[in-house]
Image 1: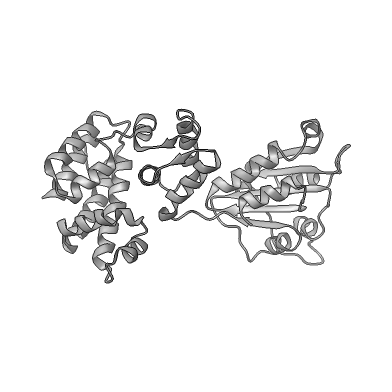
Image 2: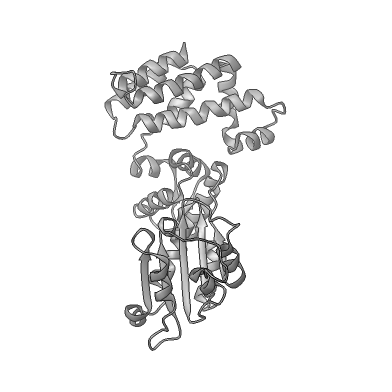
Length: 340
């Protein structure tokens, strides 16, 4: 089930006694968790029948103590364990002399309790008996990270659900700029929509005006200038970055350039250079394939490998290792080495 489907079943009051929400992408876990915390129970019932615990501040016996209570003047109670990855889950083994209280509960959970574990930034061990018990008697949802190439489509879907539209170039730029951190992307989109009339199409201009990406001086324009070996434009942009370090931090620049040139390297490796195959191999929208074709013409395999080595070197220097040069100066040095 998807996060949206889980929420839909909750809205229909089709409850499971135990939920395990786990995985590397926190956005969907938070989406379900927020619904459980704020909307599952009527306001009048929340005071008596909602318990919210945090993994680092609680333990299994406290969770079980709450889960074994009966709801007060209601059909259900909710026990929500946030940041469950920080909780000590205890020994998973069970024998006649040493009964695991958590496993014992999960094998026979109280039907009037909705117990939800939010286990973020990693996968719960599927080999554990506790996992198998939840799988048998409850519901498990794994929140997997979204591939970079899928982010533009996710943005378009998110925008559409809110009653807005966004053109392809705008969604592609946002995806490239924000990456696959869905929580960050959703937050930026919510702020963006506050400045756009409902039903209006979101364009590159809206993004430039509201998300702080300069129309001419941003990391994507730098990539394009480097790809074409446009020395004048690349130096214009890097000088702008030096003058505006807060909006163009070196960690963002290095990260984007590393992704860009890693894909240029992948282009060199790819035998089938049809647009669709390249888009698939590079993990990009077909619209951007031409940028990597241009860059591959500008930088042969050997030079591309050298550039990736430079990027690693300057990542270390940006952290103050073997260098006293400021970030602006480091970026200028790096761009000079890439272009020459």
